[in-house]
Length: 322
Ligand code: SF4
Image (tube, rainbow, N blue to C red; front, side, top):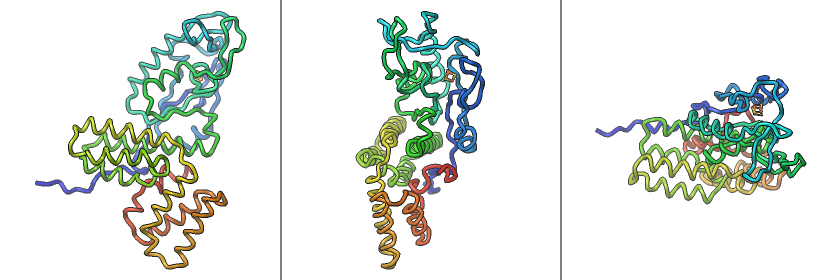
């Protein structure tokens, strides 16, 4: 007997990403001075849509709050995480903690870490020489560096960059894409479900990385002839790499033109010209992305074009986060 149920393709509204976050950003008094640095986007805006796991590496290795400050030191043996002025070295403890936390949390969709911290910062962290003099500002926190090494495909971002609307949009879209894929593979999926999933992500992937969209298509084309685990791993890799690329204006225009093509023949001349003009205006930078997207969504629904309406491009994350 054949199973002809509809493919269970997770939509944005069906998933609740699991995101690990530096505890101090959630308002916990765990910083070196027993303070915090609560980030309102995380605590007030994103929190209704995700499940957080709070992590403070320095507290978890047994340092209390308040505590002496740590810094990155360029030592002979490599970059070390040490208490200022020649104190204890916590590099190995924090690295081992990153290994444990990464293994304990296999079902994450992203990390959000505190910027500029010698433990959690993902970039631009000050490094010092052994004599205490400043060396440069190109370091990466020891915990953050190890996480990136262990799970290179997982979205990782830091709080400061989330204040930039473009970077925030990209990170949140990546997290929700990761959560949809994780939901698909967590269920009793069949190769045809992966085909439908890939099809629903076509326009969004084109906006991020057209070459990897095509590469993912080749993975999907082999769906029936590979072991499921191998297929899932291959698709996850290329899908995650595609979403790691930030969409540029030209790629959005390209994706919107793909969207527009099947609906244009159903529209009369006036409406067709309206849509084309608005896409052009976005391409020139005269209007924000929302303007053509709202019009395209309106026509996809109005013309009842199911294939287009199912595209994740229209709702990469919950609309309230826009
Ligand atoms: S930056 Fe990281 S280690 Fe420092 S207080 Fe925040 S969570 Fe803890």
